[in-house]
Image (cartoon, rainbow, N blue to C red; front, side, top):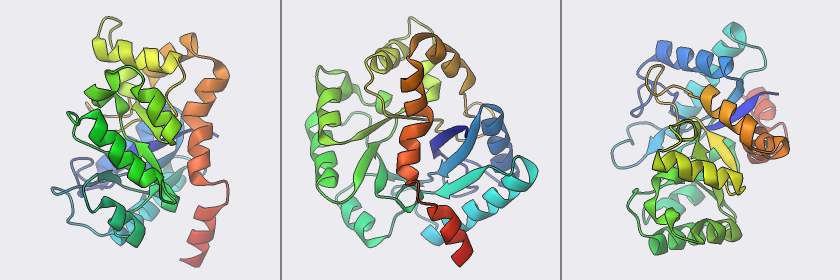
Length: 248
Protein backbone atom coordinates (compact mmCIF):
# COMPACT_ATOMS: atom_id res chain seq x y z
CA UNK A 1 0.00 0.00 0.00
CA UNK A 2 1.22 3.50 -0.81
CA UNK A 3 1.12 6.65 1.26
CA UNK A 4 -2.19 8.03 2.55
CA UNK A 5 -2.94 11.73 2.16
CA UNK A 6 -5.49 12.91 4.74
CA UNK A 7 -5.56 16.58 3.69
CA UNK A 8 -6.23 17.51 0.06
CA UNK A 9 -8.40 20.03 -1.77
CA UNK A 10 -9.21 17.93 -4.83
CA UNK A 11 -13.00 18.36 -5.04
CA UNK A 12 -13.55 20.70 -8.01
CA UNK A 13 -15.23 24.09 -7.65
CA UNK A 14 -16.18 24.04 -3.95
CA UNK A 15 -13.35 26.00 -2.30
CA UNK A 16 -9.97 27.53 -3.19
CA UNK A 17 -8.69 24.16 -4.38
CA UNK A 18 -9.21 22.41 -7.71
CA UNK A 19 -11.12 24.51 -10.23
CA UNK A 20 -12.46 21.75 -12.46
CA UNK A 21 -12.51 17.99 -13.07
CA UNK A 22 -9.46 18.09 -15.32
CA UNK A 23 -7.34 19.69 -12.62
CA UNK A 24 -8.61 17.25 -9.97
CA UNK A 25 -7.58 14.32 -12.13
CA UNK A 26 -4.14 15.84 -12.76
CA UNK A 27 -3.69 16.34 -9.00
CA UNK A 28 -4.48 12.67 -8.41
CA UNK A 29 -1.99 11.67 -11.12
CA UNK A 30 0.71 13.74 -9.47
CA UNK A 31 -0.14 12.27 -6.08
CA UNK A 32 0.10 8.72 -7.41
CA UNK A 33 3.44 9.48 -9.06
CA UNK A 34 4.67 10.62 -5.63
CA UNK A 35 3.63 7.32 -4.02
CA UNK A 36 0.16 8.22 -2.72
CA UNK A 37 -2.55 5.62 -3.32
CA UNK A 38 -5.24 6.92 -0.95
CA UNK A 39 -6.56 10.46 -0.59
CA UNK A 40 -9.10 11.91 1.82
CA UNK A 41 -10.62 14.95 0.13
CA UNK A 42 -10.97 17.79 2.64
CA UNK A 43 -12.66 20.87 1.15
CA UNK A 44 -12.80 23.84 3.48
CA UNK A 45 -15.83 24.45 5.65
CA UNK A 46 -15.83 28.07 6.82
CA UNK A 47 -17.82 31.26 6.38
CA UNK A 48 -16.38 31.67 2.90
CA UNK A 49 -16.92 28.09 1.74
CA UNK A 50 -20.39 26.70 2.43
CA UNK A 51 -22.06 26.65 -0.98
CA UNK A 52 -22.15 22.86 -1.20
CA UNK A 53 -23.60 19.95 0.72
CA UNK A 54 -21.98 16.94 2.31
CA UNK A 55 -23.68 14.79 -0.32
CA UNK A 56 -22.07 16.90 -3.05
CA UNK A 57 -18.65 16.12 -1.59
CA UNK A 58 -19.34 12.41 -1.28
CA UNK A 59 -20.71 12.24 -4.83
CA UNK A 60 -17.64 14.01 -6.23
CA UNK A 61 -15.34 11.68 -4.29
CA UNK A 62 -17.05 8.58 -5.65
CA UNK A 63 -16.70 9.92 -9.19
CA UNK A 64 -13.03 10.82 -8.70
CA UNK A 65 -12.28 7.39 -7.27
CA UNK A 66 -13.93 5.59 -10.18
CA UNK A 67 -11.96 7.68 -12.64
CA UNK A 68 -8.70 7.18 -10.76
CA UNK A 69 -9.19 3.42 -10.52
CA UNK A 70 -9.88 3.21 -14.25
CA UNK A 71 -7.21 5.61 -15.50
CA UNK A 72 -4.49 5.76 -12.83
CA UNK A 73 -4.48 2.59 -10.72
CA UNK A 74 -7.13 0.06 -9.63
CA UNK A 75 -5.83 0.38 -6.05
CA UNK A 76 -6.50 4.12 -5.80
CA UNK A 77 -8.97 5.16 -3.07
CA UNK A 78 -10.70 8.50 -2.53
CA UNK A 79 -12.60 9.19 0.68
CA UNK A 80 -14.66 12.20 1.71
CA UNK A 81 -13.93 14.56 4.58
CA UNK A 82 -13.70 18.28 5.34
CA UNK A 83 -11.23 20.75 6.77
CA UNK A 84 -13.37 22.53 9.35
CA UNK A 85 -12.55 26.06 10.46
CA UNK A 86 -13.37 25.90 14.16
CA UNK A 87 -16.04 28.19 15.61
CA UNK A 88 -18.59 28.09 18.42
CA UNK A 89 -20.92 25.82 16.40
CA UNK A 90 -18.32 23.38 15.09
CA UNK A 91 -18.88 20.72 17.73
CA UNK A 92 -22.63 20.87 17.25
CA UNK A 93 -22.23 20.56 13.46
CA UNK A 94 -19.86 17.63 13.82
CA UNK A 95 -22.24 15.79 16.12
CA UNK A 96 -25.27 16.47 13.89
CA UNK A 97 -23.54 15.45 10.68
CA UNK A 98 -23.66 18.89 9.07
CA UNK A 99 -19.96 18.53 8.34
CA UNK A 100 -17.97 15.41 7.45
CA UNK A 101 -15.42 13.70 9.62
CA UNK A 102 -12.42 12.17 7.87
CA UNK A 103 -13.74 9.20 5.87
CA UNK A 104 -16.81 9.13 8.13
CA UNK A 105 -14.61 8.16 11.06
CA UNK A 106 -14.39 9.72 14.53
CA UNK A 107 -11.42 11.85 13.43
CA UNK A 108 -12.07 15.53 12.66
CA UNK A 109 -9.66 17.72 10.67
CA UNK A 110 -9.69 21.18 12.29
CA UNK A 111 -8.01 24.47 11.40
CA UNK A 112 -7.76 27.78 13.22
CA UNK A 113 -6.50 31.28 12.57
CA UNK A 114 -2.69 31.19 12.44
CA UNK A 115 -2.46 33.88 15.14
CA UNK A 116 -4.67 32.09 17.68
CA UNK A 117 -3.40 32.09 21.24
CA UNK A 118 -2.33 28.78 22.70
CA UNK A 119 -4.92 28.95 25.49
CA UNK A 120 -7.74 29.37 22.94
CA UNK A 121 -6.38 26.59 20.75
CA UNK A 122 -5.99 24.22 23.68
CA UNK A 123 -9.49 24.96 24.98
CA UNK A 124 -11.12 24.32 21.60
CA UNK A 125 -9.25 21.07 21.03
CA UNK A 126 -10.02 19.91 24.56
CA UNK A 127 -13.75 20.44 23.93
CA UNK A 128 -13.57 18.13 20.94
CA UNK A 129 -11.31 15.62 22.69
CA UNK A 130 -13.85 15.28 25.51
CA UNK A 131 -16.43 13.94 23.05
CA UNK A 132 -16.34 10.69 21.07
CA UNK A 133 -14.36 12.48 18.35
CA UNK A 134 -10.61 12.76 17.92
CA UNK A 135 -9.29 16.16 16.81
CA UNK A 136 -6.71 16.26 14.03
CA UNK A 137 -4.97 19.64 13.95
CA UNK A 138 -4.33 20.67 10.35
CA UNK A 139 -0.92 22.02 9.26
CA UNK A 140 0.56 22.48 12.72
CA UNK A 141 3.44 24.50 11.27
CA UNK A 142 1.14 27.50 10.75
CA UNK A 143 0.42 28.20 14.42
CA UNK A 144 2.98 30.50 15.97
CA UNK A 145 1.78 29.62 19.47
CA UNK A 146 3.03 26.05 19.00
CA UNK A 147 6.61 27.33 18.87
CA UNK A 148 6.32 27.88 22.63
CA UNK A 149 7.92 25.26 24.86
CA UNK A 150 5.85 22.21 25.87
CA UNK A 151 2.81 23.09 23.73
CA UNK A 152 3.19 20.17 21.33
CA UNK A 153 3.71 17.83 24.27
CA UNK A 154 0.50 19.06 25.92
CA UNK A 155 -1.55 18.61 22.75
CA UNK A 156 -0.21 15.09 22.32
CA UNK A 157 -1.14 14.29 25.92
CA UNK A 158 -4.63 15.63 25.21
CA UNK A 159 -5.04 13.10 22.41
CA UNK A 160 -4.77 15.52 19.51
CA UNK A 161 -3.40 14.08 16.28
CA UNK A 162 -0.89 16.52 14.78
CA UNK A 163 -0.79 16.87 10.99
CA UNK A 164 2.07 18.54 9.11
CA UNK A 165 2.25 19.50 5.41
CA UNK A 166 4.93 17.86 3.27
CA UNK A 167 5.79 21.16 1.60
CA UNK A 168 7.19 22.78 4.74
CA UNK A 169 9.61 19.92 5.37
CA UNK A 170 11.44 20.44 2.10
CA UNK A 171 12.43 24.08 2.46
CA UNK A 172 15.89 25.57 2.83
CA UNK A 173 17.81 24.36 5.87
CA UNK A 174 18.10 27.92 7.18
CA UNK A 175 14.37 28.70 6.85
CA UNK A 176 12.82 29.07 10.32
CA UNK A 177 9.64 27.16 9.46
CA UNK A 178 11.55 24.31 7.84
CA UNK A 179 13.94 24.07 10.80
CA UNK A 180 11.00 23.88 13.21
CA UNK A 181 9.20 21.24 11.12
CA UNK A 182 12.29 19.06 10.94
CA UNK A 183 12.91 19.43 14.65
CA UNK A 184 9.34 18.31 15.43
CA UNK A 185 9.77 15.31 13.16
CA UNK A 186 13.08 14.32 14.72
CA UNK A 187 11.43 14.50 18.15
CA UNK A 188 8.50 12.32 16.93
CA UNK A 189 5.79 14.88 17.64
CA UNK A 190 4.08 14.61 14.26
CA UNK A 191 1.43 11.93 13.81
CA UNK A 192 0.46 12.22 10.16
CA UNK A 193 1.48 14.04 6.99
CA UNK A 194 -0.70 15.63 4.33
CA UNK A 195 -0.15 17.35 1.00
CA UNK A 196 -2.76 20.09 1.51
CA UNK A 197 -2.66 20.26 -2.29
CA UNK A 198 -4.85 22.93 -3.88
CA UNK A 199 -3.94 22.72 -7.55
CA UNK A 200 -1.67 20.93 -10.01
CA UNK A 201 0.91 23.72 -10.31
CA UNK A 202 2.34 25.73 -7.41
CA UNK A 203 0.35 23.86 -4.75
CA UNK A 204 0.54 20.29 -5.91
CA UNK A 205 1.47 17.28 -3.72
CA UNK A 206 5.13 18.37 -3.18
CA UNK A 207 6.04 15.05 -1.57
CA UNK A 208 9.31 14.00 -3.22
CA UNK A 209 11.74 16.51 -1.68
CA UNK A 210 10.21 16.03 1.77
CA UNK A 211 10.54 12.25 1.49
CA UNK A 212 14.16 12.59 0.41
CA UNK A 213 15.00 14.48 3.60
CA UNK A 214 12.91 12.22 5.86
CA UNK A 215 14.45 9.01 4.53
CA UNK A 216 17.86 10.38 5.47
CA UNK A 217 16.99 11.69 8.92
CA UNK A 218 14.06 9.73 10.36
CA UNK A 219 13.70 6.20 11.63
CA UNK A 220 12.12 3.96 8.99
CA UNK A 221 9.42 2.73 11.37
CA UNK A 222 8.42 6.27 12.36
CA UNK A 223 8.34 7.35 8.71
CA UNK A 224 5.93 4.52 7.93
CA UNK A 225 3.77 5.59 10.87
CA UNK A 226 3.36 9.18 9.70
CA UNK A 227 2.94 8.45 5.98
CA UNK A 228 0.71 5.39 6.19
CA UNK A 229 -0.04 3.52 9.42
CA UNK A 230 -1.54 6.33 11.51
CA UNK A 231 -3.73 7.32 8.58
CA UNK A 232 -4.83 3.70 8.28
CA UNK A 233 -6.03 3.98 11.87
CA UNK A 234 -8.19 6.92 10.81
CA UNK A 235 -9.66 4.81 8.01
CA UNK A 236 -10.45 2.12 10.55
CA UNK A 237 -9.30 -1.16 8.95
CA UNK A 238 -12.96 -2.10 8.69
CA UNK A 239 -13.67 -2.08 4.94
CA UNK A 240 -16.02 0.83 5.60
CA UNK A 241 -15.57 2.24 2.10
CA UNK A 242 -16.29 -1.04 0.33
CA UNK A 243 -19.42 -1.62 2.41
CA UNK A 244 -20.64 1.91 1.71
CA UNK A 245 -20.08 1.48 -2.05
CA UNK A 246 -22.05 -1.78 -2.03
CA UNK A 247 -25.03 -0.07 -0.35
CA UNK A 248 -24.95 2.76 -2.87
